[in-house]
Length: 210
Length: 240
Image 1: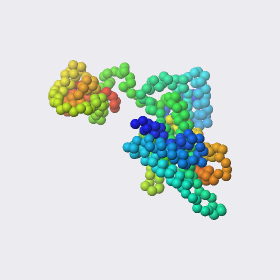
Image 2: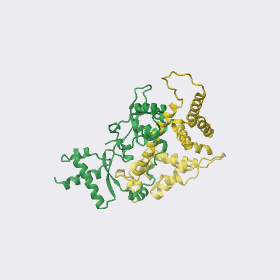
Image 3: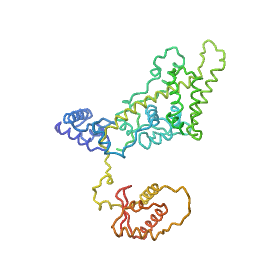
Image 4: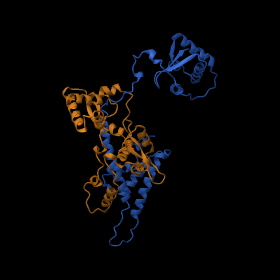
């Protein structure tokens, strides 16, 4: 099989897939292809598209490849999907998502504790939008539900992996010019590094129906 | 309620506190508790008292601030040499900083959201006939209607007719039989009629209800048939 034909296979699969299709999935469907080759082919396709001024490109989102339109056409697409586009997330939703993303899996009470307000309604909304999912139950008292982010979360924000997100700043960065002998700050930095629970990529829950 | 709007700008007590700290240009780890508490309480009085769900969290924070203020005013016990005086603000500062961290992440992912919403993925494969006006009408008379479909149309129509606020008792001269005849007449003339078309012409809630009951009666007696192409699509009435 020549390279040009392999390229067409990859293109056909990405074109017809209704969810971002992973390199692994493509490799499963065509044994002559492996992840490295597929990535190279996607790069080639993207440069072909650019050269021939296509209106779309292959984006690498949520661990897979997906055709996306270029920004230049946003106004027309917005008109096309008028009334069917969901609104942007509220400040409360974004805050809760930020917390869930970097501390998952965690319970609603833990989100409440950081935000200082009840986040029940907000989390319900995030569940409905499939941006977070129930990632299990805590062993703690009352066995509360634990939440984590979904593949849709990655897709929605156009990222491939949680590791691509800007991590929350360390406390000393926020405090900037704070000097070392300050008792409070030192103990704060200590507490926070202890509780730091961010773990990278393998942590998000794969919930998308394949 | 002008003050509610103002308070809703804040996501919670921590958000309000951070705002005050920034507004006063003071260091987060050296909060002038007396001043900040004063200002916080001023904001708090703006809370609509009936809105207890919202208010309780703000009130809790006020109590915390006042406790810290009191603690700072009390004379400190003598300490051993190696012991360090604990600052009563410490816990609060820790919470504020923790919240601040995630608030910053929230701003950043908000930018990502904005960016990504400009790209439209090739992913929505659900085809919706309602959006396509050129569809063959025969095709529209495809599937049987579910009771939920009927209910949703009914609810939609009832929503458009506001409930009357004044209350005068008057008899509305309408019967199920009459409305059944109205429907049959329309169906006879036009072969098939849209359910919404019939209900929309009616201005009186009770007549909508009677007409709807009449329609159910006609279906039960197998005089008309209801069809719908998709869930939530228009419902057609046709003579059997």
